[in-house]
Image (cartoon, rainbow, N blue to C red):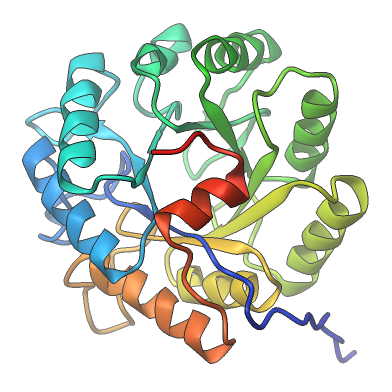
Length: 286
């Protein structure tokens, strides 16, 4: 049976490009361009900003490339990003690969503009990504205390609905911003019918909210285009995908952001400036 995909009028609507520069999984053995040290991350982020990124989604690593939740590393990265990319939106990860329990939110007192927040559990390729309700409530409370706007990472439809409920109950600080994450093995695949359902769920149930979409691996460029064509915002970067195509490694984070910016141009969508992105997301001025 032939699918009929939804069409949207999006010309002229600014698109926020988020760059996920490092993550917790890819290593230099996978792609030498993956930035590990704080200095490498700052340089890579600066290049991505010049290519069009207005949000830098940040993890930190130990010297052996293993993931970390060290607040001192996050502090050094935040200072470097603010110095070399003034006005950029700094978004810290509270993801579960970098630490356990409240350790995951130990950097929120640094008051980044945003932080990722997973509001439910799901399967990852080789483990369960656990986000129990008490931890979700604690992380959301820390974000509220420090004025940090959550970006809800939705790996499943239930996470979208949970985010809308929590925001309606006042648990989530600031404007609701939900990111669809598609392509993680054992979670939600890159599926256009599901993507369209997600978009309509957000528009029907949370019309004032903003949304974004990220694709993992080969799904990155596909989901970038779906999100841009549907009027949402999108994420690219070496955290999610280390390749330009089947035969070429991505030479930088900037190359993946530049590809997303080219898609924006095809749909006549301007790439959002720092100020435009902050206004769209309801963030404080830089």
